[in-house]
Amino acid sequence: MSIEIKMPALSPTMEEGTLAKWLVKEGDSVKSGDLMAEIETDKATMEFEAVDEGVIGKILVAEGTDNVKVGTAIAVLLEEGESAGAVSVPKAAEAPKEQPRAEAPKQEAPAAARPAEVPAAAAPASGDRVKASPLARRVAAEKGIELSALSGSGPNGRIVRADVEGSKAAGGPAAGSAAAAPAAPVPVARPAPAGAPAKPVAIPDIPHTAEKLSNVRKTIARRLTESKQTVPHIYLTVDIRLDKLLKLRADFNAALEPRGVKLSVNDLLIKALGVSLMQVPKCNVMFTPDQLISFQRADISVAVSTPSGLITPIIAEADTKGLAAISEQMKDLAARARDNKLKPEEYMGGTASLSNMGMFGIKQFEAVINPPQGMIMAIGAGEKRPWVIDDALGVATIMSATGSFDHRAIDGADGAQLMQAFKALVEAPLGMVA
Image 1: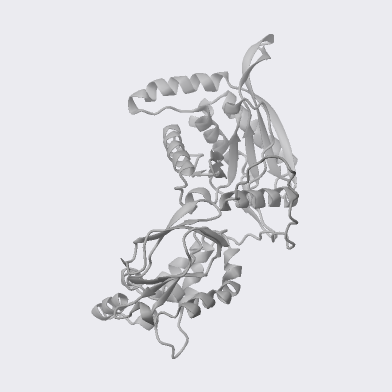
Image 2 (image 1 turned 180 degrees about the horizontal axis):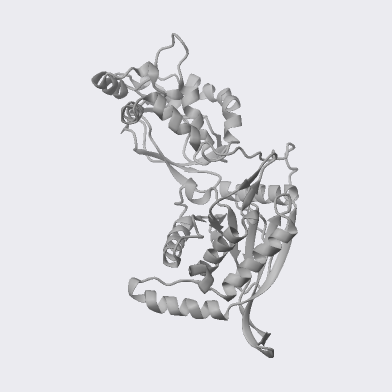
């Protein structure tokens, strides 16, 4: 029986995408893990892998097609012995009309919720034929595994070879189901997008060019609008002397030169924010409609500008990670972000954000919170300013840092304590590496 290959949800917030490029053509044989297409999601351009084996019988959605809803059939995969003539294209094309309604609520779930829900949907009803690939049936027969007891991870709950082999390794399907449960995160309610479509904008009769909005740009616009409309921001600014941090950076870079590591000021600020969040845990939080989530480590999302828009790759465990490791990881993440090669887990999540515009000479700014996080630190340029040093007027290198806080979750006094802790660590930087 032929299998519908459907538009996947390649990120937790993805509802539709652009089928940028097919990497296979009709008549090609594919197996699990083969790359089939490049899909532009709401965050990046990602490669879509096959989860079953067979022959591409029909491509239903042409490459370059925009706004393809998650769950829409995009191709048909033939099993052994089937011919392309047996494919009913109208039926395959009509199926998604009902599918998105059933699956739409799942697309609102947080990052790990979607995989955890697959087994529940895959369980066959009593008396139904078990959906499994020929290879999965052969492996199950060889191992003596009952297919009806397994949950399928393939299209439409279809059992594939990995499900059979995984159940054996894990000690049976029950163990696999139990292991999946802890992966589900705390649900986070997200505001619904505006119901009414925007009215067309009257474009002045002035020479101009027009560029179609990418999915990434649409997502940036939606999330920033959501943040400013639904999150009550409070802004707190401090001036910080950088001289000791710049001296320490120079000493570290001299010592790390044989290893080819060169720390940036931003690397040290990422570390400082991670440590300060652990010192003031009331700011390392996330607000939900009925819970306040407090995190036990600091994962810092760092704003990176790319040709397609802003993205925030994450430095996990920034509070405990070494400076050299932060520097190397940040360079790798930033390079892959600009090439649209980040994986969802590398930019989805984080407990707080840092945005540095100092390299552009920006003295001070107020950043928009990246929901559902509770705060973001905005870093301005370091500049020479008059400063009182040891009770005498002198000149020092000063930068302004502004914290934006979600006032629903973080009180002003707690935000002020975080800014004090951040300032103290930057001005006495040995404290963050001790």
